[in-house]
Length: 248
Image (tube, rainbow, N blue to C red):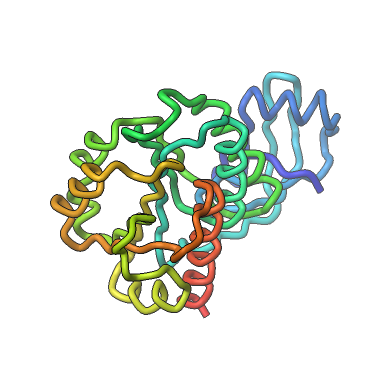
């Protein structure tokens, strides 16, 4: 059964697809009227239904089965400086979507190598990964913003959350491991994990984060230096274990 990203009306038991999804449904996969398909709305609902009207611009139908999934116990957000190549950022988004990360904030760092990203393409990649993985919740992607502006705009949210900054400077004593993360998350509903560019965060950026958000936990991977996207997948995998442990 093929899955599509669309709007689901639970009360009316109907669905509709966007123009892009309708084209993919009718022209690429050549789904026929009355054929069973799956629909995800990115908000925790996965449905099974059949198209009653289908064209390259529009697809609407009725739903026979609706499954609602509870939101994860912990919301996990990555604050990431985009990678040097767009392809590596795209891979990061795809894998974080599959692993159930709640959202990614892209920020400009003093040592970052990219001043712009194609957020529309990244959202399309996220939707494709959302459909492929069957994850009930779609990752929220936020367009590139200056690091300092992000801190100012998000300061209230950050102060009420567990904030982890991945640094590779000498003197960072605490190493990141699954046990440490699990032991620190019990009282927090949200976790923000800052992952810098390959030259790491600028010292001024680390100082700003720690001055503005005193509860920031600075950690490292020890003697190992990971690429930005590798670090993101590592922590995303750790956080998936966190949510699985809190729901079991």
